[in-house]
Length: 357
Image 1 (tube, helix red, strand yellow):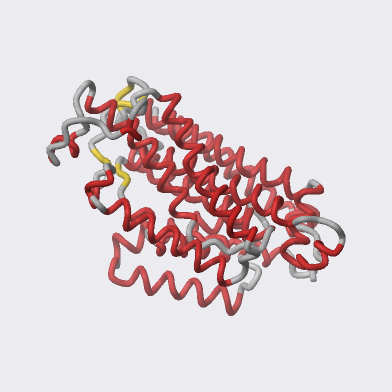
Image 2: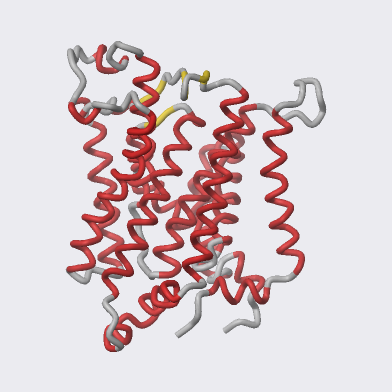
């Protein structure tokens, strides 16, 4: 049974990789400071650039969350988009209430609603919105995982079920009568905690919160990977039947990491929405969940750092190609997946592990 890949990388990573990681951390710290410079300053960056990088960092958190369940427990989820979107919708409900004040949210007035649905109660309070951001994805993952792992569903069947879950959620949220804005979703946000959401200070605060969540997610991942729990997860991935023979019940281990992964996605979605300014059911599209799997595969699953690199590379390329040649972006994404499968089976991080078998 192979030990967690992250341990091997930590021992074998060349000094240049560690230096690159340190430079990336310094860059993330410097970006908000550069946004404070006067517009005429040559090193000034726009709030749009800050938002774009913040969005990519939110995707990187999703990649880490997926790597915890796929890279360590061997559970390929093609439905993490639903957890990301649920966290985003919970934050969007708070932002819509802030924009509406004492009135109903704009889309409800347009649909001639005369009262708030019961599940909107309390969403004008930030603390309750934060609770929903954690509880809703977490409880959905807990219930889904309990029945899936109890039924010993794994492999391709588990992937299909997770994809069906996010697709069902997308169809549900597309309906106007569900109370989530239908096809248009939520937009038109104005304030966050009483501060203008488009103000530079608010953008910087959201960016810093995203960086902190990213670092915290990596810290949690490293802690789990180097613990006894991480070794058991690796055994679940590599030899689950042998693990059961040794007296372990893998269901609890899988359920815990699955639920934790969903909560991280929900938090990433909550930070994504105020930075981008919109949330709609398309975020639950199975395509987005498949893209997340490509980020992890490109960077190197079971490495934690690799998925961050993969998310940055793919979404950076996506930002460029969707502006330069938008009609070829999907072809380029498919090419990435094929190239990684053929030439980088261990992802980008595998390039630095040539001697590891």
